[in-house]
Length: 190
Image (cartoon, rainbow, N blue to C red; front, side):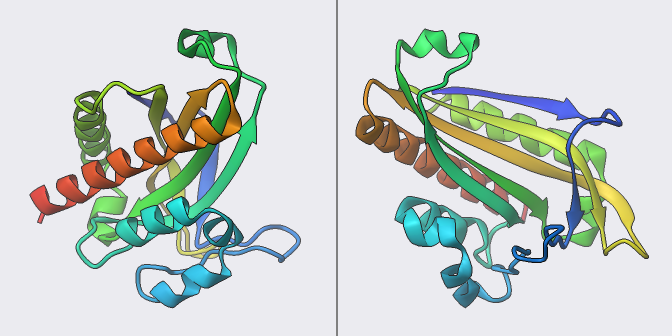
């Protein structure tokens, strides 16, 4: 499995308001860490049981992180750098993660170290046609009126194959590897 991390802190790079609500007010953040039953309200988790299992692991009591946002999709549009997989299909997802500890949320060195260790663990995973990229980005905690600047991660998990079903299986194996790595790091940081 390919694994990498990047730092995206430029003014025009993506950022996250936490907690968030979409501009239309139709979608919003669900606190799965403190209210795990709310996972039933996340359409992606209902449609993809593999993602639901991943979210349960990420938001468990023992986890150092919690989810903020997620999405899942399948595509046949692959970027040139994805040619290495010799695949026609990609099954993909992203999950935005924040540290549960307020003190960790504002520390760039803690985020960078965590992303580096996560990447190192995932590079040791068995070779499968999949990738995990962790992007360290800027986050604004506490809403618009009293926002405190900090950081968050977007974790992109992709599975590749020449048909959608196999790409999904490879995605699921990468999700499982990422969940195990995140759980291991959480235990090390306790």
